[in-house]
Length: 444
Image (tube, rainbow, N blue to C red):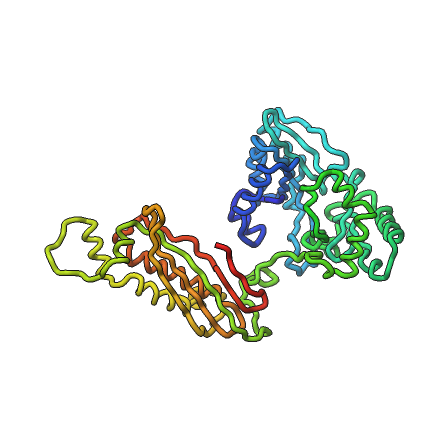
């Protein structure tokens, strides 16, 4: 796994998206699993996250985690491309510098044995469960022991991350090359590998691929981390590997999931800026979406919305709860007001959500249902909104907005009696139909 910072704000700056909490959650799941080892890569950049190395080392205290600090490497790609990492030698922190800092903090740390052909040089701290290490590709290369080969998603074989030269297995496969010929091509690529890559100032950062375009899963298979040693050997054996490679390269759509594309955010342009999705090439179709959510309320609020709203004249009560109930009743029928607010919210979605398209709605149906739990101690009001249109884009956002506004209105109507006990939650899209992505129904 990769995590370059413990700071959620820096995470967004580095990755151009949210997800820091999701990465930490995935890491915790991995550490609690039966995996033989969990490795966490940290690319260290001067002035950005080099002050966090002790925080990462402390993660190894109680868990069998291997933290690997990686020197900032040049993967700029085309100088005008957004795919590059804007590499600068001044941002690179040598592994030796990091080790000096850590030695001052942990004077008893010691060198740990490395596996054959391992790219990281590992260290341990007495009393710590895990380990940490350094991948010093820039300041102290390990080219002589590197046995890495990569097949890119478009079928090129790459023997070194920093070498722009590639050989195409895809083209040879589509030409009809035999397994023996493929093995010769792979062998030729390996024998053509240089003794070591260029110095960091001389690496080709213009024609070489950026890291985001190298590698990627090519076949449907379990992740190697979940495979036994013998399974990995079988997977990579020519008798097993070459037929799958042949299928994927000659007919990439022959099997489901053969080629995987990188996930992307539809509302960001190529340079990571907010942008409205272009729907001009879509044909109008009938689309519907249903969303639901609920607001948990105290018993007194539940009784108010399920009883008569007639306010009788009479002596003023000094009871605070009674005063609050009268105040809530004076606002009118809470559920009717919330229903109208929800319908208006659906119609105003494009005004509230900046990049939503303004589309004509054919129908908005909203229901609010007071519900008492089986234990008669839990009370909530369930809101459901169904929105329909004949247009070029879906109406999930309109349905979600309707539910959100409806529940917020209930909150406003009942806050005099609900106080701090109310809670809004479980807002989800439960059903959608129409559009290119097809129909969807959530199991609740």
